[in-house]
Image: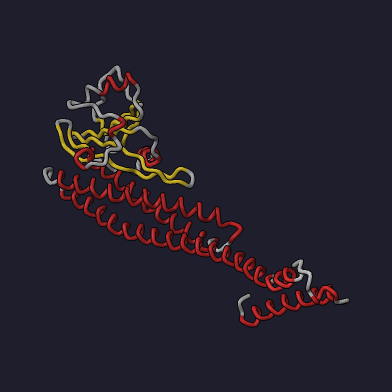
Length: 315
């Protein structure tokens, strides 16, 4: 699907692109989402160089993510997206050519829906394609900030549940999801910083001071968010260590009970073993009260061992 965003005065009109006609005048943005074969054929007239491929969106080399060619500036950017309790990363290719922004993606992105909502409500001000691209990155940073705040709230809840043995499996699973999600957030911040630095170098040729200041402000916001992600990592690891340590402590208590029980019953077992031997000469076998005497000895030895452990404070 290809959607055209046309600048009409100060407002932006959103409409599906008619492939049988030319691109509307004053088109500010073409959003290409999972193009079919017919749309891919039509896209060939947009690009002078090689047509982007979906499998190229996940390339991590800087030379493949940020570069300039005859088609303009190309920026691959990673966007975090919450899916239920999980956070995943979605790559989007931005191509900035003159005053036209082209986005190419294979997954639905909630940030794009939010951007369209702002456009319909006329809450978005973009005079050109570069402003629109910077607006997208600004929304991305704000969304990442919200994800970090959600991470703090989640860890506040898990901190109260980490010592609850009955709910320990759920708590550890939640912490693992938070660790994975925080990794996607941190990776997106690093990727966004690289993209903005590339754009800043490119904007020097345009000599737009306001846009460069805008980029500097976003870079400053990223630098202020990165320590939060490290703090979340530390807090997640602390809670995981506490949960695993508490689990080991509970297991040690169980093992301790079995160990004490084995030691308590060791003297009675020894007495029973002695009188269970089948030698012909055993004086005690002729006692009238030999059986109750052996029972009393076993009971006294068990109680004595238990009292010794209790007095030492080992129970």
